[in-house]
Amino acid sequence: MTRSTHSTAEENESATLTVTASATRVFTILADPSAHSAIDGTGWVQEPADPAPLTEVGQIFRMNMYHPKHPDGDYRVANKVEVLDSPRAIGWLTGTEKADGRLEFGGWIWRYDLTPLGPSETEVTLSYDWSAVPPSVREYIQFPPFGPEHLIDSLRHLAELTEGTS
Image (cartoon, rainbow, N blue to C red; front, side, top):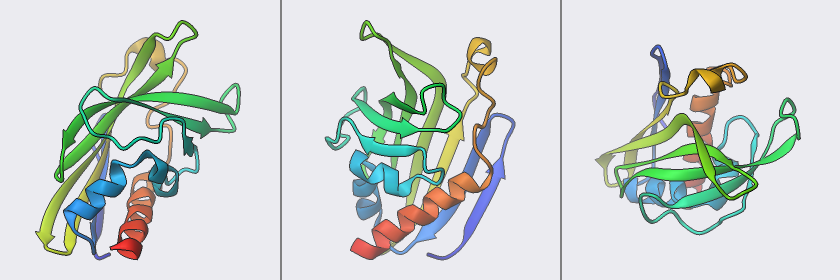
C-alpha cells in the first residue's frame, strides 16, 4: 500500500488509498459480504446473514452488526446494492428490515471506486454519503456516526486482505 488521503465535504466523507493488488482482486473481495467484517474499521460489522457474492444492482444482503450504543447491542442491517460496475465501482444503501418484511433505507450509501494504476496496483476511494438522510433519522443518529479514521482504517484492512491473497 502506498499513499492515502482523506477528505470531508458537507455531507460526504471519503478516503483514498493505493493498494498493491489488481482492481479485479479488490472488487472480488468487496463483492464478498463474508469479507466485510475484516474490512470494517469500526468493529461494528459482524458476519453476513446473506453470504452470497454481490452480483447485481438491487440485490439485498443482510449483515449482523454490533454497536454498544445500539438499543439491542446486536442488530441486523439490510443493504441494497446501488452500484455494481465490475471492477470499477460497488456501493450499497444501508437500512433495516421491519417485522413485516418491509425494507427501509436510511439515506446513506457506502461506495468504493477503483482506479487501476497498473496490473497490480489500484487506487481505492471509499465514500460515505449521508446527504439523503431525512430529518426524522437525523433526530436520533449523528452523521457521520464514526470518527474520521474509520474510512482510512477500512481501506487499510482492505489492502491487507487484497495484498495478502493476490
